[in-house]
Length: 98
Image (cartoon, one colour):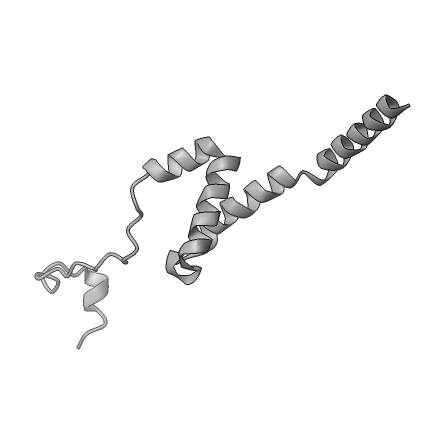
């Protein structure tokens, strides 16, 4: 009788874990934190360590790709001014001036 109860409990636990998918939910949460949190300094060192550890454990291939990717440039590109802008104006641009 004990074997049947153990098997039923294991079957019920497996069913619940399959329905709730805690591993996938934890991985999705960690991926969202890595992508959309913004500045890492907001959460503190302990939170950063937890997020990185959870992400590395739940999605090792994605974590490795993120770690190897170069950091994205956060500054907006500075517009380059053309020193000869007056000479390079089109006829349409000249019509607006007196």
